[in-house]
Length: 266
Image (tube, rainbow, N blue to C red; front, side, top):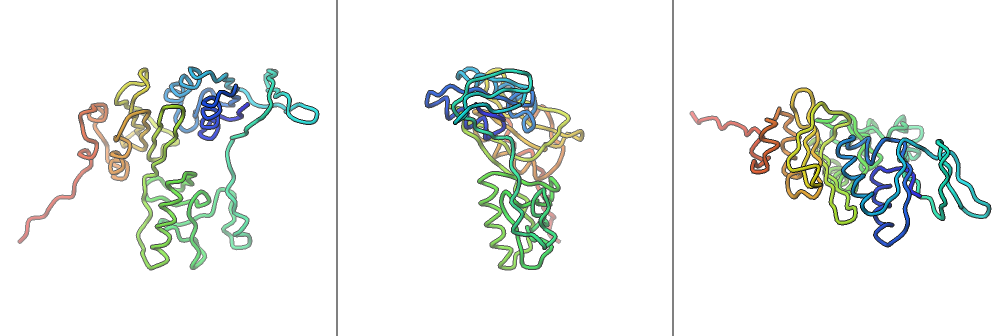
């Protein structure tokens, strides 16, 4: 039984099914990766897991684990009982801020850092999953992914050597599930409009999540090459994009980013 169907739960479920194990999922939200990707994209991924034989129970949660010497079954709040040899619980993480106790930086949501990853304590920086970063585009954000940890670590090294540059990475990450690859860039806890390049039904697409002003806040793709990484400049520029251009696979996203004007000499 996998409890939770965020990225950890989804990847564990896919890995276990790939080696032939029976998998049942319990998820408190209405579909897979609901909080991150929303219902439309979440249901596409839900369909992939169902096609691979995962049994899924949504809008439910664990009431208790039962067994004598070891786990034997899981009982949900709705009263469902399911036999289980192993339970994998992937329902979120808490940043380990205890190391900063007594500094004023040991906040529950992470270690707060400014645009350059410097804390308010001179000479102390934070990077990776624990850093609550005041991002110049997204505002306060804490990212839990390998690529971010590597890039933040590199940025901190430069900062320690005197660089004052802000860390403005658009936060690209990926997830491999079965034979499919999910990629995502940017940050959009909410959005007002979704524009799709490709097809949700055919499970091959790049989706653009736009705010009320038509600005691309995040991009998400499933088995669709190049466009998420080509959207980095568009996300960072924070300019409104033409929805028709976003939906057209023949349009190079890099060309939608405004270029600085060259001033004529003299």
